Amino acid sequence: MSEYARITVTLTQPVAAGRNARADFRQETHNHVPGSVLRGALAAAWIRRRGRDIARSPEFVETFEGTGSFGPLHSEGSLPVPLSVKKHKYASSDGCGSEWDAAYGERATTCEACGDPLVFSKGQPRGRVPLEHRTMVALSPKGVALDGQLFSQSTLKEETSLSGWLHGPATHAVFCDDEPIRTLSLGSRRSLRGSVTVHVDTEATPAPIECVGEDIILRLASPAVFCDDFGFPMDRPDLVELSEVLGVAALEVTDAWTRWGEVGGWHAASGLPKPVERAVAAGSTYRVHFAEAPSLESRRALATRGIGLRRREGFGALYVAPPRPEAHA
Image (cartoon, rainbow, N blue to C red; front, side):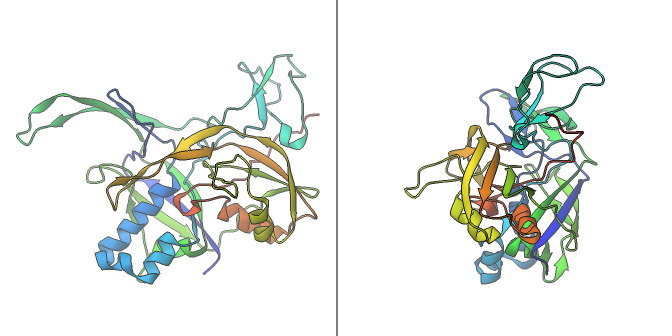
């Protein structure tokens, strides 16, 4: 099997992947499927097919707890605008350039065409992601509405397609007993929703990480967890890790556009919350200088592997920015 595989899911029911727990009656959802949700759904599919004892097998441990990466599943519109990108502060008029990227050395502060001010992205989605909202009420065993249990939940709409990458041992997760997994249940309340169809392409070729001279540009598609030699969180990737993966000495991070955030979650198998720790937000961007330009194949591998810690939970996933309009000075 290839070192990486492209996985695409199409929603046949609405999917809710909860985020930002709130004290009021509204429950929000991610505008994509995080890698941790995909990993959990695939592990659950293995257990349903082969019984709970499979979870203690070396095969299961290597696939779901090993060095592989479960990337998030994004639509074209849900990918974050890189933090290095400047866009119009207000709605742009026809004929104005759409964005300026400081990672390429573009330092404009106002639009050349209309004179409007430009501001750095905050990692917002690149496009509009279709969501639906449904208000429900919790019922007692007798079917009576419970007081104070009215809530509204957001879900990704059915027929939405999302794609991402698996890397290393994680590529085995989409095959159980040598049979491909063709359907999954994602997110919460899976007895009522969350059904998706699955398509896996083991022949797909990922776009290589961007390379400009001896520099590469890293853009995060999901939050990333980095730490220093003492275990404290930091907002820069590990140069030693990058050197080992790319086979070329990484010399320094010459520029970085980052925001801090926090990550946590829920471990369904144990029924316990995951630890909450600081992480660099999705959309954060780095320009890293190397002793020489890394090879094309190593940059393809890095694009699917990701960077940092907890990659098997979907953290540290990378993406390559779509082709841009004519560059700006």
